[in-house]
Length: 573
Image 1: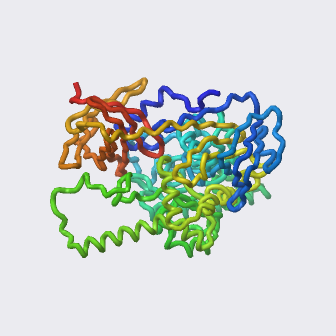
Image 2: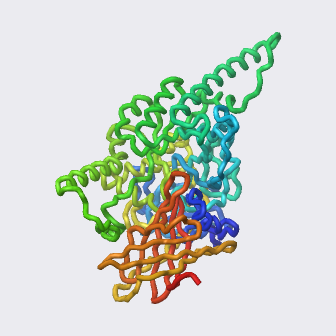
Image 3: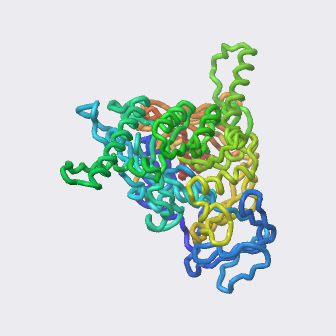
C-alpha cells in the first residue's frame, strides 16, 4: 500500500499566504487527523465479509458480504462465496454504507487567489469576466484531481460531488465527479450537469446589487431565447436572412431554455430563496437550489415550486458553549452588562429559538415532505459530522440523515441508477465505519470510490495531562513553515484569575488580533482568532500540547483541515 495523501510541495506555502491574503483561507490546509492509505492496484476485487450492511435507509443486512470487482458492486448478501483473488476485509464489527453525495461543492476546484482589480473604464458595461458572467465556462477545466479538498471530503465518507467553479453571477457549468482519480476526465460521472448561478454582484460595476443581478439575469435569458429562436428560423431556411452571430454566453442558456440542463442557484437566506423562486416563476426553467441556510419560512413556496433542494451543512456556532460544552468565561468584557436580568433572559431565549430553527431546519423540511440533499460548499470539513449530529439531536432521524447523504441526492441529481445504495450493479462507492456512522465515537476505516479502496488508520488523540504544570502567560513565537516559506508570529497570553486573554501579532496584521475561546486543560491548549479580508471574516482554530518552553499543534481554517505549527517561549529573536 502507498499513501494516497501526498505532500504537495509548492502548495503548502498557501497556508502561510492565507494569513497574508485571508480570502485564500478556504481549502488551503492538508489534513492531519488521519493518513489515508490506498491499496496498490494489484487486484480490483475486494470482499467485506460478515459486516452490517445498510444498503439504504431502512434496509439493513446483518453478517453480510459485499463483493467489489472492477469498480462495481457485484454481490451483496449472506452466504456469498468470496472470490479467490479478493482482498478480504473482516467486517465483524464494521458498518457498510453507500458512499455519500455532496449536492453543491467546490471539491477539487482550487479557490482563485484574491486579486485587486481596477474599476472598469465603463462601470455600466464591464467585461463579462469582471461582471462574473461566464456561463460558457466548464468546471472540468479547473478541477485538480490532487486538490486536498477532495481528500478532506473523502475521509468523511463522501465519494461523489456536484462541483461548480468559483465566481459571481454566472461562474460556469457544474459537473458530478467521483472523488478519486488521477485525471479529471476519469473522475467525471456527469458533465455539464448544471448552469451554476449566484446572486453575487460585481464590485463597483454593473450588476453590483442583488436587484441588478436579477435584472441582468432576466435580460440574458430573454436575449438567449430570441437568439435561439432566430437560429432556428435561419436553420430552417437561411435564404435572404442575415447569418446569426455566435454568442457563447447566450448559447449557454439554450439547454436551460430547452430544460435539458437545470439552473443550480446558490441561495442561502430566505430572501435570496424568494428571489430565485421569482426568476423560476418568470421563465419556468428546471431549478435546483443549494446551500440553503435559512429556508424554513420558505418551505411552502419551495414545495409548490417543485425546485430540488440541497440544505447547507453549515450551522452557526453555539456561542453559549465552548468545545467542551462549558460556558466560555475566558473573554468577558471588563465593563458590566447594561441589560437587566429580565432582558438577559429574553435575549438568551431568542438566541436559543434562533439556533433551534437552524439545527431543526432539516427535520422541518422532511416533515413537510420535501426531499433534500446536503451541500458542503461553505462548511469546514471538520464541522460536518458535528453538524449532522446537531441536526439529529434537533429532530432529524439517522435514517433521514442517511437518505439526505445518499438516496436523496442520487435521485435529485438523476444518478439513482448508478450510486446511492449498496446494491448489485451499482458503482462501488462505499463508506465503512467501525461503529454506526452517526455515533459520535465512530471513525471511518475504509472508503471505496469507483472500486478504489482507501484505508484510514486513525491516529490516537492526544490526552491532556491533568498533573502537568504549564506557565502559559507570556509571549510565544509561533512558527508556520513549509518547503518554500517560513512565517513567525508573536502570541501573548495574560492570566486573569483562572482565565486567559491574549493576542496575536504579525507583520501582515494592521494591529494585534485578539484571541478567543482560550482554554488550557492540563497541558492541552486551544484558542481561536479571526482575520478579515474583503468584507469577510475567517476563523482559525488552534490546538496544541504545551511543554515547559515550547508547544506543538495544528491550525485549522476554512473549508479544509489542519496544518502543523510550533511555538517557543519568548519573543521573536
